[in-house]
Length: 25
Figure 1 (tube, one colour):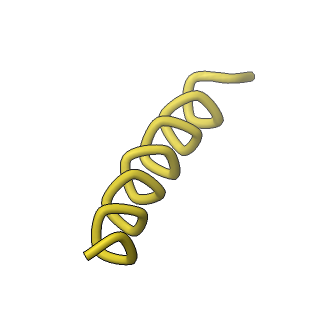
Figure 2 (cartoon, helix red, strand yellow):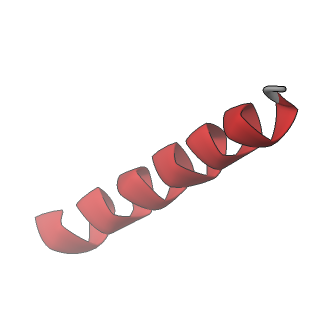
């Protein structure tokens, strides 16, 4: 399903953004 794959990609994206924010001062 495209929806499931999209959610997976968004989840990874959110995790990456969260990590970047955590590293940011």
